[in-house]
Length: 83
Image (cartoon, rainbow, N blue to C red; front, top):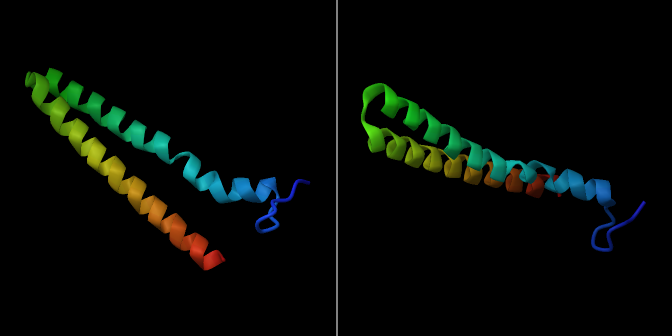
């Protein structure tokens, strides 16, 4: 097993440390994309072409960034407690 010189963790320990962070970018992008398509569907339904796409895209962006920051802060706090 390969050991890290810094704290003696192996590669599996490194993956356990960074694992929770790996899906955050995908989750952020998925939130924005899903909200874009919800806005597009609402525009088609109510015939308000650019309005709902813009509103839902911005809401998706804000919700995704909020969730991203909240999750990173929680994970960092958990890592501080574990050490």
